[in-house]
Length: 574
View 1 (cartoon, rainbow, N blue to C red):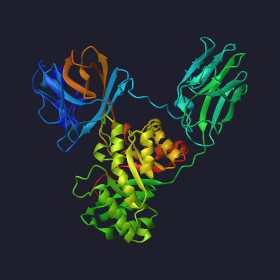
View 2 (view 1 turned 30 degrees about the horizontal axis):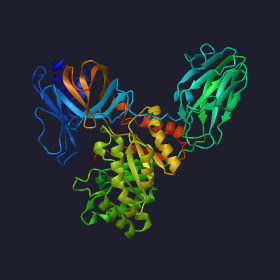
View 3 (view 1 turned 90 degrees about the vertical axis):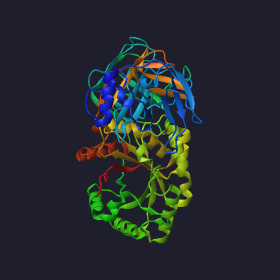
View 4 (view 1 turned 120 degrees about the vertical axis):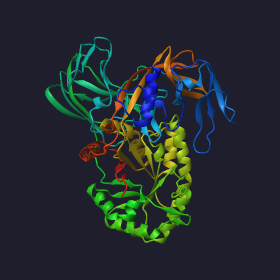
Protein backbone atom coordinates (compact mmCIF):
# COMPACT_ATOMS: atom_id res chain seq x y z
CA UNK A 1 0.00 0.00 0.00
CA UNK A 2 2.72 2.46 0.93
CA UNK A 3 4.80 1.98 -2.22
CA UNK A 4 1.71 2.35 -4.36
CA UNK A 5 0.60 5.52 -2.56
CA UNK A 6 4.06 7.06 -2.56
CA UNK A 7 4.73 6.21 -6.20
CA UNK A 8 1.46 7.71 -7.27
CA UNK A 9 2.02 10.77 -5.09
CA UNK A 10 5.34 11.43 -6.82
CA UNK A 11 3.61 10.95 -10.16
CA UNK A 12 1.00 13.52 -9.16
CA UNK A 13 3.57 16.12 -8.23
CA UNK A 14 5.77 15.59 -11.28
CA UNK A 15 3.23 15.36 -14.03
CA UNK A 16 -0.34 14.72 -12.94
CA UNK A 17 -0.12 11.38 -14.70
CA UNK A 18 -2.03 8.14 -14.38
CA UNK A 19 -5.74 7.50 -14.16
CA UNK A 20 -6.29 4.98 -11.37
CA UNK A 21 -4.66 6.89 -8.55
CA UNK A 22 -5.52 6.27 -4.94
CA UNK A 23 -7.22 8.98 -2.96
CA UNK A 24 -4.34 9.31 -0.51
CA UNK A 25 -2.31 11.71 -2.69
CA UNK A 26 -5.28 14.07 -2.86
CA UNK A 27 -4.05 15.77 0.32
CA UNK A 28 -0.37 15.78 -0.52
CA UNK A 29 1.18 19.07 -1.68
CA UNK A 30 -1.74 21.45 -1.46
CA UNK A 31 -0.60 25.03 -1.09
CA UNK A 32 -1.77 25.56 2.47
CA UNK A 33 -0.51 22.44 4.20
CA UNK A 34 2.88 21.01 5.04
CA UNK A 35 3.90 18.03 2.95
CA UNK A 36 6.01 15.44 4.71
CA UNK A 37 7.56 12.61 2.68
CA UNK A 38 10.02 9.82 3.24
CA UNK A 39 11.67 7.13 1.17
CA UNK A 40 11.15 4.44 3.82
CA UNK A 41 9.15 1.35 2.91
CA UNK A 42 7.07 1.15 6.07
CA UNK A 43 6.01 3.50 8.82
CA UNK A 44 8.21 3.59 11.88
CA UNK A 45 6.12 3.46 15.03
CA UNK A 46 7.95 5.77 17.36
CA UNK A 47 6.91 9.28 18.32
CA UNK A 48 6.11 12.62 16.71
CA UNK A 49 4.31 15.89 17.38
CA UNK A 50 1.32 17.37 15.61
CA UNK A 51 2.10 21.09 15.74
CA UNK A 52 0.19 24.30 15.03
CA UNK A 53 2.61 27.23 14.62
CA UNK A 54 2.24 30.89 13.58
CA UNK A 55 2.95 31.71 9.95
CA UNK A 56 6.27 33.13 8.85
CA UNK A 57 4.78 36.36 7.50
CA UNK A 58 4.13 35.00 4.04
CA UNK A 59 1.03 33.05 4.96
CA UNK A 60 -1.27 31.85 7.67
CA UNK A 61 -0.69 29.44 10.51
CA UNK A 62 0.96 26.12 9.70
CA UNK A 63 0.03 22.58 10.65
CA UNK A 64 2.92 20.12 10.64
CA UNK A 65 3.99 16.77 12.05
CA UNK A 66 7.57 16.89 13.34
CA UNK A 67 9.93 14.45 14.99
CA UNK A 68 10.63 16.80 17.89
CA UNK A 69 8.43 19.18 19.81
CA UNK A 70 8.52 22.60 18.06
CA UNK A 71 10.65 25.27 19.74
CA UNK A 72 9.16 28.24 17.85
CA UNK A 73 7.29 30.68 20.11
CA UNK A 74 3.52 30.44 19.87
CA UNK A 75 3.44 26.81 18.72
CA UNK A 76 1.03 24.30 20.21
CA UNK A 77 1.66 20.58 19.87
CA UNK A 78 0.26 17.12 20.55
CA UNK A 79 2.32 13.95 20.95
CA UNK A 80 1.43 11.07 18.62
CA UNK A 81 2.59 7.41 18.64
CA UNK A 82 3.94 7.43 15.06
CA UNK A 83 7.09 8.64 13.39
CA UNK A 84 6.87 11.88 11.42
CA UNK A 85 8.11 10.10 8.30
CA UNK A 86 4.97 7.97 8.21
CA UNK A 87 2.82 11.05 7.47
CA UNK A 88 1.99 12.17 3.94
CA UNK A 89 0.11 15.38 4.74
CA UNK A 90 -1.80 17.25 7.42
CA UNK A 91 -4.43 19.98 7.15
CA UNK A 92 -7.09 21.61 9.33
CA UNK A 93 -10.35 19.72 9.59
CA UNK A 94 -13.63 21.50 8.81
CA UNK A 95 -14.76 23.47 11.84
CA UNK A 96 -17.37 21.60 13.87
CA UNK A 97 -19.44 22.67 16.88
CA UNK A 98 -18.88 20.89 20.17
CA UNK A 99 -22.15 18.95 19.93
CA UNK A 100 -21.75 17.86 16.30
CA UNK A 101 -22.18 14.14 15.57
CA UNK A 102 -19.03 12.16 14.93
CA UNK A 103 -18.29 11.96 11.19
CA UNK A 104 -18.84 8.65 9.46
CA UNK A 105 -17.48 9.70 6.06
CA UNK A 106 -14.85 12.19 4.90
CA UNK A 107 -14.73 13.23 1.23
CA UNK A 108 -11.91 15.21 -0.34
CA UNK A 109 -11.97 16.91 -3.73
CA UNK A 110 -8.87 18.46 -5.28
CA UNK A 111 -7.35 19.66 -8.53
CA UNK A 112 -3.76 20.12 -9.74
CA UNK A 113 -2.23 23.47 -8.87
CA UNK A 114 1.02 25.36 -9.24
CA UNK A 115 2.57 23.54 -6.30
CA UNK A 116 1.07 20.11 -6.82
CA UNK A 117 -2.47 19.32 -5.72
CA UNK A 118 -4.85 21.96 -4.33
CA UNK A 119 -7.60 20.83 -2.01
CA UNK A 120 -10.88 22.42 -2.98
CA UNK A 121 -13.36 20.69 -0.68
CA UNK A 122 -13.31 18.63 2.48
CA UNK A 123 -16.73 17.49 3.62
CA UNK A 124 -17.85 15.29 6.46
CA UNK A 125 -21.08 13.30 6.85
CA UNK A 126 -23.22 13.61 8.78
CA UNK A 127 -22.73 17.32 8.28
CA UNK A 128 -21.30 19.32 11.14
CA UNK A 129 -23.76 22.20 10.92
CA UNK A 130 -27.49 22.29 10.36
CA UNK A 131 -28.06 22.62 6.61
CA UNK A 132 -30.81 25.10 5.68
CA UNK A 133 -33.74 23.62 3.82
CA UNK A 134 -33.50 24.21 0.06
CA UNK A 135 -35.67 26.74 -1.74
CA UNK A 136 -38.47 25.69 -4.00
CA UNK A 137 -37.40 26.98 -7.41
CA UNK A 138 -39.82 28.92 -9.64
CA UNK A 139 -40.35 27.11 -12.93
CA UNK A 140 -39.06 23.79 -11.57
CA UNK A 141 -41.18 20.82 -10.52
CA UNK A 142 -41.32 20.61 -6.73
CA UNK A 143 -40.26 16.96 -6.99
CA UNK A 144 -36.88 18.03 -8.40
CA UNK A 145 -36.18 20.08 -5.27
CA UNK A 146 -37.96 18.23 -2.46
CA UNK A 147 -38.29 14.46 -2.38
CA UNK A 148 -41.74 12.94 -1.96
CA UNK A 149 -42.74 10.38 0.66
CA UNK A 150 -45.93 8.77 2.00
CA UNK A 151 -47.73 10.37 4.91
CA UNK A 152 -49.97 8.81 7.55
CA UNK A 153 -50.54 5.41 9.19
CA UNK A 154 -49.12 2.34 7.49
CA UNK A 155 -51.34 1.08 4.69
CA UNK A 156 -53.56 4.16 4.49
CA UNK A 157 -51.57 5.76 1.64
CA UNK A 158 -49.47 3.97 -1.00
CA UNK A 159 -47.07 5.97 -3.15
CA UNK A 160 -45.59 4.93 -6.51
CA UNK A 161 -42.70 7.05 -7.85
CA UNK A 162 -41.37 4.58 -10.42
CA UNK A 163 -42.76 6.35 -13.49
CA UNK A 164 -42.89 9.92 -14.76
CA UNK A 165 -46.09 10.47 -12.77
CA UNK A 166 -46.31 10.26 -9.00
CA UNK A 167 -49.34 8.14 -8.08
CA UNK A 168 -51.08 8.04 -4.70
CA UNK A 169 -53.63 5.39 -3.72
CA UNK A 170 -55.58 5.88 -0.51
CA UNK A 171 -57.87 3.62 1.46
CA UNK A 172 -60.87 5.04 3.29
CA UNK A 173 -60.19 6.47 6.74
CA UNK A 174 -60.30 9.54 8.92
CA UNK A 175 -56.63 9.81 9.98
CA UNK A 176 -54.58 12.30 7.91
CA UNK A 177 -52.67 10.54 5.14
CA UNK A 178 -51.33 11.24 1.67
CA UNK A 179 -48.00 12.41 0.32
CA UNK A 180 -45.58 14.98 1.68
CA UNK A 181 -42.73 16.90 0.10
CA UNK A 182 -39.56 17.08 2.18
CA UNK A 183 -39.21 20.35 4.04
CA UNK A 184 -38.22 23.28 1.81
CA UNK A 185 -38.45 27.05 1.88
CA UNK A 186 -40.75 29.24 -0.18
CA UNK A 187 -38.67 32.01 -1.75
CA UNK A 188 -39.51 35.63 -0.85
CA UNK A 189 -41.04 36.31 -4.27
CA UNK A 190 -44.47 37.94 -4.54
CA UNK A 191 -47.38 36.58 -6.57
CA UNK A 192 -46.40 32.91 -6.76
CA UNK A 193 -48.71 29.96 -7.45
CA UNK A 194 -48.42 26.21 -7.69
CA UNK A 195 -49.45 24.75 -11.04
CA UNK A 196 -50.69 21.17 -10.78
CA UNK A 197 -51.45 18.76 -13.64
CA UNK A 198 -53.35 15.76 -12.28
CA UNK A 199 -56.01 13.11 -12.63
CA UNK A 200 -57.96 12.19 -9.50
CA UNK A 201 -60.83 10.28 -7.99
CA UNK A 202 -62.65 12.53 -5.53
CA UNK A 203 -61.14 15.71 -4.11
CA UNK A 204 -57.62 15.78 -2.69
CA UNK A 205 -56.57 18.67 -0.44
CA UNK A 206 -53.26 20.53 -0.83
CA UNK A 207 -52.11 21.95 2.50
CA UNK A 208 -49.03 23.62 3.95
CA UNK A 209 -47.69 22.94 7.45
CA UNK A 210 -44.86 24.28 9.57
CA UNK A 211 -42.42 21.59 10.74
CA UNK A 212 -42.40 21.21 14.50
CA UNK A 213 -45.76 22.93 14.97
CA UNK A 214 -47.54 22.08 18.22
CA UNK A 215 -49.39 18.76 18.22
CA UNK A 216 -52.93 19.14 16.97
CA UNK A 217 -52.12 22.21 14.91
CA UNK A 218 -54.12 22.18 11.70
CA UNK A 219 -52.22 22.52 8.40
CA UNK A 220 -53.31 25.42 6.25
CA UNK A 221 -55.48 24.62 3.25
CA UNK A 222 -54.17 25.96 -0.06
CA UNK A 223 -56.80 24.43 -2.37
CA UNK A 224 -58.71 21.29 -3.28
CA UNK A 225 -57.82 19.37 -6.41
CA UNK A 226 -61.13 18.52 -8.01
CA UNK A 227 -61.90 15.07 -9.36
CA UNK A 228 -60.81 14.65 -13.00
CA UNK A 229 -60.88 11.63 -15.33
CA UNK A 230 -58.17 13.08 -17.60
CA UNK A 231 -55.14 15.31 -17.11
CA UNK A 232 -56.39 18.61 -15.67
CA UNK A 233 -54.43 21.77 -14.89
CA UNK A 234 -55.06 23.72 -11.71
CA UNK A 235 -53.45 26.89 -10.32
CA UNK A 236 -53.13 27.25 -6.57
CA UNK A 237 -52.17 30.84 -5.62
CA UNK A 238 -49.92 31.04 -2.57
CA UNK A 239 -51.39 33.28 0.13
CA UNK A 240 -49.51 36.60 0.33
CA UNK A 241 -49.07 36.12 4.08
CA UNK A 242 -47.42 32.70 3.69
CA UNK A 243 -44.10 33.07 5.52
CA UNK A 244 -41.20 33.21 3.07
CA UNK A 245 -37.73 31.94 3.93
CA UNK A 246 -39.38 29.69 6.52
CA UNK A 247 -39.08 25.90 6.19
CA UNK A 248 -42.50 24.51 5.22
CA UNK A 249 -44.04 21.14 4.41
CA UNK A 250 -46.38 20.91 1.44
CA UNK A 251 -48.71 17.92 1.64
CA UNK A 252 -51.44 16.39 -0.52
CA UNK A 253 -54.04 14.73 1.73
CA UNK A 254 -56.34 11.83 0.90
CA UNK A 255 -60.12 12.26 1.07
CA UNK A 256 -61.93 10.30 3.79
CA UNK A 257 -63.47 8.09 1.11
CA UNK A 258 -60.04 7.13 -0.28
CA UNK A 259 -59.21 7.28 -3.96
CA UNK A 260 -56.50 7.51 -6.61
CA UNK A 261 -54.41 10.54 -7.59
CA UNK A 262 -51.83 10.86 -10.36
CA UNK A 263 -49.55 13.93 -10.41
CA UNK A 264 -47.98 14.71 -13.79
CA UNK A 265 -46.62 18.14 -12.84
CA UNK A 266 -46.50 20.23 -9.68
CA UNK A 267 -44.53 23.39 -10.42
CA UNK A 268 -43.97 26.62 -8.52
CA UNK A 269 -44.87 29.46 -10.89
CA UNK A 270 -43.82 33.11 -10.66
CA UNK A 271 -43.57 36.07 -12.98
CA UNK A 272 -40.15 35.97 -14.57
CA UNK A 273 -38.23 38.98 -15.83
CA UNK A 274 -34.78 38.21 -17.17
CA UNK A 275 -32.50 41.23 -16.70
CA UNK A 276 -30.48 42.04 -19.83
CA UNK A 277 -27.28 42.95 -17.96
CA UNK A 278 -24.21 40.84 -18.84
CA UNK A 279 -20.69 41.40 -17.58
CA UNK A 280 -17.17 40.03 -17.42
CA UNK A 281 -13.76 40.77 -15.90
CA UNK A 282 -10.64 42.11 -17.62
CA UNK A 283 -7.86 41.33 -15.17
CA UNK A 284 -4.91 42.05 -17.44
CA UNK A 285 -4.80 45.84 -18.07
CA UNK A 286 -2.92 45.29 -21.31
CA UNK A 287 -6.11 43.98 -22.90
CA UNK A 288 -7.99 47.26 -22.66
CA UNK A 289 -4.90 49.51 -22.85
CA UNK A 290 -3.36 47.97 -25.98
CA UNK A 291 -6.32 46.57 -27.89
CA UNK A 292 -9.63 48.07 -26.75
CA UNK A 293 -11.25 47.24 -30.10
CA UNK A 294 -10.79 43.51 -29.38
CA UNK A 295 -12.39 43.95 -25.96
CA UNK A 296 -15.38 45.77 -27.44
CA UNK A 297 -15.79 43.18 -30.21
CA UNK A 298 -15.91 40.32 -27.74
CA UNK A 299 -18.20 42.31 -25.47
CA UNK A 300 -20.60 42.94 -28.34
CA UNK A 301 -20.59 39.24 -29.32
CA UNK A 302 -21.85 38.28 -25.86
CA UNK A 303 -24.03 41.33 -25.22
CA UNK A 304 -21.88 42.59 -22.35
CA UNK A 305 -23.19 45.71 -20.65
CA UNK A 306 -20.53 45.96 -17.94
CA UNK A 307 -16.78 45.38 -17.67
CA UNK A 308 -14.81 45.05 -14.46
CA UNK A 309 -11.28 46.17 -15.38
CA UNK A 310 -8.06 46.19 -13.41
CA UNK A 311 -6.47 49.62 -13.47
CA UNK A 312 -2.69 50.06 -13.08
CA UNK A 313 -1.70 52.14 -10.07
CA UNK A 314 1.39 54.12 -9.18
CA UNK A 315 2.62 55.76 -5.99
CA UNK A 316 0.77 58.95 -7.00
CA UNK A 317 -2.53 57.28 -7.89
CA UNK A 318 -3.65 55.96 -11.27
CA UNK A 319 -0.72 55.16 -13.53
CA UNK A 320 -2.36 56.53 -16.71
CA UNK A 321 -5.62 58.41 -16.03
CA UNK A 322 -5.71 59.76 -19.58
CA UNK A 323 -5.72 56.28 -21.11
CA UNK A 324 -8.40 55.19 -18.65
CA UNK A 325 -10.57 58.17 -19.52
CA UNK A 326 -10.27 57.36 -23.21
CA UNK A 327 -11.28 53.73 -22.67
CA UNK A 328 -14.19 54.54 -20.38
CA UNK A 329 -15.50 57.17 -22.80
CA UNK A 330 -15.27 54.70 -25.69
CA UNK A 331 -17.03 52.05 -23.60
CA UNK A 332 -19.82 54.51 -22.84
CA UNK A 333 -20.34 55.00 -26.57
CA UNK A 334 -20.81 51.19 -26.80
CA UNK A 335 -23.34 51.28 -23.90
CA UNK A 336 -20.90 49.48 -21.63
CA UNK A 337 -20.46 50.58 -18.03
CA UNK A 338 -16.90 50.32 -16.71
CA UNK A 339 -16.26 49.36 -13.09
CA UNK A 340 -12.87 49.24 -11.42
CA UNK A 341 -11.66 45.82 -10.32
CA UNK A 342 -9.65 45.47 -7.13
CA UNK A 343 -8.29 42.10 -6.05
CA UNK A 344 -8.37 41.52 -2.31
CA UNK A 345 -5.38 39.69 -0.93
CA UNK A 346 -3.11 40.37 -3.89
CA UNK A 347 -1.42 43.54 -2.61
CA UNK A 348 1.96 41.80 -2.60
CA UNK A 349 2.10 42.49 -6.32
CA UNK A 350 4.12 45.68 -6.82
CA UNK A 351 1.69 46.84 -9.51
CA UNK A 352 -1.34 46.64 -7.20
CA UNK A 353 -1.81 49.17 -4.46
CA UNK A 354 -3.49 48.31 -1.16
CA UNK A 355 -7.27 48.52 -1.29
CA UNK A 356 -7.77 51.77 0.61
CA UNK A 357 -5.15 53.66 -1.37
CA UNK A 358 -6.65 52.35 -4.61
CA UNK A 359 -10.11 53.44 -3.52
CA UNK A 360 -8.89 56.98 -2.84
CA UNK A 361 -7.17 57.12 -6.23
CA UNK A 362 -10.34 56.01 -8.01
CA UNK A 363 -12.39 58.65 -6.18
CA UNK A 364 -9.89 61.35 -7.15
CA UNK A 365 -10.04 60.21 -10.78
CA UNK A 366 -13.85 60.38 -10.92
CA UNK A 367 -13.81 63.86 -9.43
CA UNK A 368 -11.49 65.09 -12.20
CA UNK A 369 -13.22 63.74 -15.35
CA UNK A 370 -16.56 64.34 -17.11
CA UNK A 371 -19.48 61.91 -16.55
CA UNK A 372 -18.84 59.85 -19.73
CA UNK A 373 -15.31 59.11 -18.51
CA UNK A 374 -16.27 58.28 -14.93
CA UNK A 375 -16.02 54.79 -13.49
CA UNK A 376 -19.51 53.64 -12.53
CA UNK A 377 -18.52 51.54 -9.52
CA UNK A 378 -15.83 49.41 -7.90
CA UNK A 379 -15.87 45.67 -7.40
CA UNK A 380 -13.47 43.88 -5.06
CA UNK A 381 -12.96 40.24 -5.88
CA UNK A 382 -12.15 37.73 -3.20
CA UNK A 383 -8.49 36.77 -3.65
CA UNK A 384 -8.24 34.78 -6.92
CA UNK A 385 -5.55 32.54 -5.42
CA UNK A 386 -8.00 31.47 -2.72
CA UNK A 387 -11.22 31.52 -4.72
CA UNK A 388 -11.67 27.74 -4.76
CA UNK A 389 -9.17 26.85 -2.03
CA UNK A 390 -10.44 24.71 0.82
CA UNK A 391 -11.19 26.70 3.97
CA UNK A 392 -11.68 25.01 7.33
CA UNK A 393 -13.67 28.02 8.56
CA UNK A 394 -15.59 29.83 5.78
CA UNK A 395 -17.27 32.12 8.29
CA UNK A 396 -13.93 33.47 9.49
CA UNK A 397 -12.83 33.96 5.86
CA UNK A 398 -15.98 35.93 5.07
CA UNK A 399 -15.74 38.13 8.16
CA UNK A 400 -12.08 38.92 7.50
CA UNK A 401 -12.91 39.81 3.89
CA UNK A 402 -15.67 42.17 4.97
CA UNK A 403 -13.39 43.75 7.56
CA UNK A 404 -11.03 44.70 4.76
CA UNK A 405 -13.84 46.10 2.62
CA UNK A 406 -15.59 48.11 5.33
CA UNK A 407 -13.30 51.19 5.15
CA UNK A 408 -13.72 51.55 1.37
CA UNK A 409 -17.31 52.79 1.22
CA UNK A 410 -16.81 56.27 2.70
CA UNK A 411 -13.74 56.81 0.50
CA UNK A 412 -15.02 55.65 -2.90
CA UNK A 413 -18.05 57.86 -3.49
CA UNK A 414 -19.41 55.24 -5.91
CA UNK A 415 -21.18 51.86 -5.59
CA UNK A 416 -19.12 49.09 -3.99
CA UNK A 417 -19.66 45.47 -4.98
CA UNK A 418 -17.86 42.22 -4.22
CA UNK A 419 -17.24 39.12 -6.30
CA UNK A 420 -17.36 36.14 -3.96
CA UNK A 421 -17.35 32.36 -4.39
CA UNK A 422 -20.55 30.39 -3.90
CA UNK A 423 -19.10 28.69 -0.82
CA UNK A 424 -19.27 31.95 1.17
CA UNK A 425 -21.68 31.67 4.10
CA UNK A 426 -24.85 33.75 4.38
CA UNK A 427 -25.94 33.06 7.96
CA UNK A 428 -27.68 35.88 9.81
CA UNK A 429 -24.65 37.69 11.20
CA UNK A 430 -22.70 37.59 7.94
CA UNK A 431 -25.80 38.53 5.92
CA UNK A 432 -26.13 41.71 7.96
CA UNK A 433 -22.48 42.55 7.45
CA UNK A 434 -22.79 41.98 3.71
CA UNK A 435 -25.71 44.39 3.57
CA UNK A 436 -23.90 47.03 5.61
CA UNK A 437 -20.75 46.90 3.46
CA UNK A 438 -21.93 46.18 -0.09
CA UNK A 439 -24.20 47.89 -2.59
CA UNK A 440 -24.21 44.83 -4.85
CA UNK A 441 -22.79 41.33 -5.14
CA UNK A 442 -21.54 38.92 -7.80
CA UNK A 443 -21.67 35.24 -6.88
CA UNK A 444 -19.18 33.11 -8.80
CA UNK A 445 -20.24 29.51 -9.30
CA UNK A 446 -18.06 26.64 -10.42
CA UNK A 447 -20.74 24.21 -11.52
CA UNK A 448 -22.21 23.48 -14.94
CA UNK A 449 -25.23 21.39 -13.92
CA UNK A 450 -28.13 23.83 -13.81
CA UNK A 451 -29.68 22.28 -10.71
CA UNK A 452 -26.37 22.72 -8.86
CA UNK A 453 -26.11 26.36 -9.97
CA UNK A 454 -29.65 27.12 -8.83
CA UNK A 455 -29.04 25.50 -5.46
CA UNK A 456 -25.79 27.34 -4.89
CA UNK A 457 -27.13 30.85 -5.64
CA UNK A 458 -30.62 30.65 -4.14
CA UNK A 459 -29.57 31.83 -0.68
CA UNK A 460 -27.69 34.81 -2.15
CA UNK A 461 -30.69 35.82 -4.26
CA UNK A 462 -32.83 35.54 -1.13
CA UNK A 463 -30.35 37.79 0.69
CA UNK A 464 -30.53 40.36 -2.10
CA UNK A 465 -34.32 40.23 -2.26
CA UNK A 466 -34.68 40.68 1.48
CA UNK A 467 -32.19 43.55 1.67
CA UNK A 468 -32.79 45.31 -1.62
CA UNK A 469 -29.36 44.51 -3.08
CA UNK A 470 -28.78 43.46 -6.71
CA UNK A 471 -27.13 40.07 -7.12
CA UNK A 472 -25.28 39.00 -10.25
CA UNK A 473 -24.74 35.29 -10.99
CA UNK A 474 -21.40 34.44 -12.61
CA UNK A 475 -20.74 31.22 -14.49
CA UNK A 476 -17.22 29.85 -14.79
CA UNK A 477 -15.84 30.11 -18.33
CA UNK A 478 -12.09 29.85 -17.66
CA UNK A 479 -10.16 26.67 -18.49
CA UNK A 480 -9.87 24.49 -15.40
CA UNK A 481 -8.08 21.21 -14.71
CA UNK A 482 -9.70 17.86 -14.07
CA UNK A 483 -9.80 16.80 -10.45
CA UNK A 484 -10.82 13.84 -8.36
CA UNK A 485 -12.79 13.11 -5.23
CA UNK A 486 -11.78 10.51 -2.66
CA UNK A 487 -14.07 9.02 -0.04
CA UNK A 488 -12.97 7.65 3.35
CA UNK A 489 -15.23 5.64 5.69
CA UNK A 490 -15.03 5.21 9.47
CA UNK A 491 -13.03 2.17 10.52
CA UNK A 492 -11.01 0.76 13.40
CA UNK A 493 -7.83 1.66 11.53
CA UNK A 494 -7.15 3.68 8.41
CA UNK A 495 -4.96 5.90 6.27
CA UNK A 496 -6.79 9.06 7.37
CA UNK A 497 -7.24 10.25 10.96
CA UNK A 498 -9.35 13.08 12.34
CA UNK A 499 -7.51 14.17 15.48
CA UNK A 500 -8.96 16.64 18.02
CA UNK A 501 -6.35 19.35 18.43
CA UNK A 502 -5.96 22.95 19.54
CA UNK A 503 -9.68 23.63 19.95
CA UNK A 504 -10.50 22.16 16.54
CA UNK A 505 -9.22 19.22 14.58
CA UNK A 506 -6.56 18.10 12.12
CA UNK A 507 -6.79 15.62 9.28
CA UNK A 508 -3.63 13.50 9.14
CA UNK A 509 -2.98 11.35 6.08
CA UNK A 510 -0.64 8.38 6.51
CA UNK A 511 1.38 6.33 4.07
CA UNK A 512 -0.47 3.21 5.15
CA UNK A 513 -3.24 2.18 7.49
CA UNK A 514 -2.58 2.64 11.19
CA UNK A 515 -4.41 2.16 14.49
CA UNK A 516 -4.37 3.63 17.98
CA UNK A 517 -3.95 7.32 17.14
CA UNK A 518 -5.79 9.84 19.34
CA UNK A 519 -8.85 10.38 17.18
CA UNK A 520 -11.15 8.82 14.56
CA UNK A 521 -9.84 6.52 11.82
CA UNK A 522 -11.09 6.45 8.21
CA UNK A 523 -10.30 3.87 5.54
CA UNK A 524 -10.07 4.82 1.87
CA UNK A 525 -13.04 3.40 -0.03
CA UNK A 526 -13.07 4.92 -3.52
CA UNK A 527 -11.86 7.65 -5.86
CA UNK A 528 -14.01 9.28 -8.55
CA UNK A 529 -12.88 11.68 -11.28
CA UNK A 530 -14.22 15.26 -11.32
CA UNK A 531 -14.00 16.38 -14.97
CA UNK A 532 -13.32 20.05 -15.62
CA UNK A 533 -16.50 20.12 -17.74
CA UNK A 534 -18.55 19.74 -14.54
CA UNK A 535 -17.04 22.97 -13.19
CA UNK A 536 -16.48 25.25 -16.21
CA UNK A 537 -18.10 26.04 -19.57
CA UNK A 538 -14.68 26.78 -21.12
CA UNK A 539 -14.62 25.87 -24.83
CA UNK A 540 -18.38 25.27 -24.93
CA UNK A 541 -19.99 28.58 -25.91
CA UNK A 542 -23.24 27.02 -27.14
CA UNK A 543 -23.77 25.25 -23.81
CA UNK A 544 -22.98 28.45 -21.94
CA UNK A 545 -25.57 30.39 -23.92
CA UNK A 546 -28.18 27.70 -23.33
CA UNK A 547 -27.36 27.66 -19.61
CA UNK A 548 -27.88 31.43 -19.40
CA UNK A 549 -31.21 31.16 -21.21
CA UNK A 550 -32.42 28.32 -18.99
CA UNK A 551 -31.27 29.96 -15.76
CA UNK A 552 -32.89 33.20 -16.82
CA UNK A 553 -36.25 31.44 -17.07
CA UNK A 554 -35.99 30.24 -13.44
CA UNK A 555 -33.76 32.64 -11.54
CA UNK A 556 -35.42 35.57 -13.31
CA UNK A 557 -38.29 35.25 -10.84
CA UNK A 558 -36.05 36.58 -8.06
CA UNK A 559 -36.40 40.37 -7.78
CA UNK A 560 -32.73 40.64 -6.77
CA UNK A 561 -31.30 39.02 -9.91
CA UNK A 562 -29.46 41.81 -11.72
CA UNK A 563 -27.91 39.77 -14.54
CA UNK A 564 -25.30 37.19 -15.44
CA UNK A 565 -21.52 37.39 -15.62
CA UNK A 566 -18.88 35.31 -17.36
CA UNK A 567 -15.89 34.48 -15.20
CA UNK A 568 -12.71 33.99 -17.23
CA UNK A 569 -13.78 35.40 -20.61
CA UNK A 570 -10.67 37.58 -20.92
CA UNK A 571 -8.39 35.10 -19.17
CA UNK A 572 -5.88 34.61 -21.99
CA UNK A 573 -3.12 37.20 -22.47
CA UNK A 574 -3.65 39.76 -25.26
